[in-house]
Length: 123
Image (cartoon, rainbow, N blue to C red; front, side, top):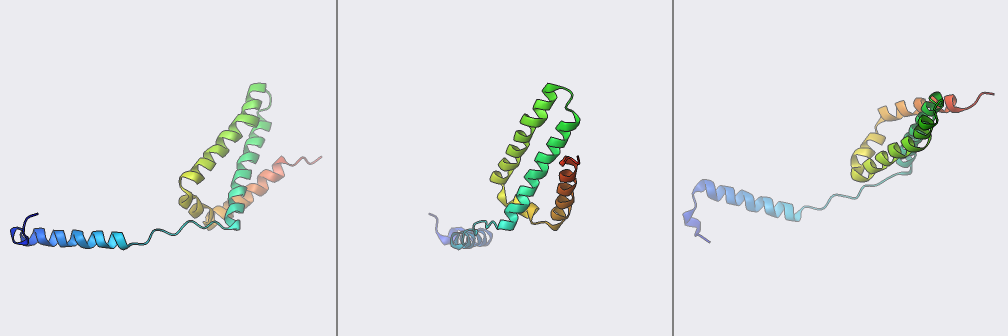
């Protein structure tokens, strides 16, 4: 290792800054684990329920063909829900931020009510 005298002032300042950065990063505490609440789970389940009801209603409107009925009743809900679950597993922080957003909550409740009302047979 070269002597300290061999470094210029700029190099010495850069090395000192690098050493300080390494010490700060080494002493930094790890991030706190993600904390799910029951309310977060319920809001996420309402999202899954809206997916299922929306696909169910689409399947009812296109029920003339057996192939399309199979796709809307069996295949599409699985793909959409697996995609949503994969998103939760890949980036739970962003999903929690989305679920805890008040705009999401104001939108998902009327959508769920509308889909539930449309899916419920009247007579």
